[in-house]
Length: 141
Image 1 (spheres, rainbow, N blue to C red):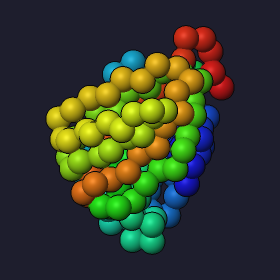
Image 2 (cartoon, rainbow, N blue to C red):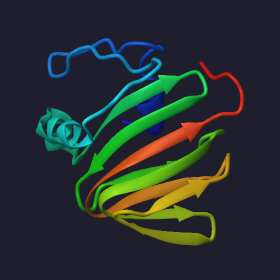
Image 3 (tube, rainbow, N blue to C red):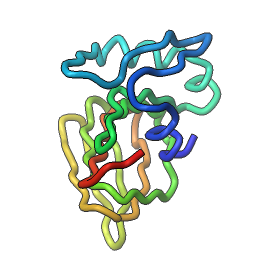
Image 4 (cartoon, rainbow, N blue to C red):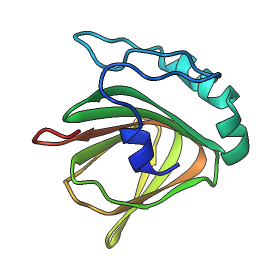
């Protein structure tokens, strides 16, 4: 699954739901999430078993996305680019991000902020969970 699919699969408001996931709100005035519970569910789904990677969009607003991602050791998200600014907050595990001319180690508890339009790759050094937040200055559909 590409990062475009992770951040743009559903219209703002509510997910469509699947056989493995019920429909859920992902926009609104005040939303709370049990990240531990979400990670347990992500790691029980077929996508995780098949690819060692899984994600769920927690928040999708016109100019902001928050995606919870889990990756098995050795899994990666190949080169990607987004027009928005983004942050990667490592909840558990250890990631390595590659940006032009730089490798960045991100162990649990670390946060990385990238300026807009920076190419990057993510590799899980060990089984990891992280929040990817993307923000745009204008309206995005």
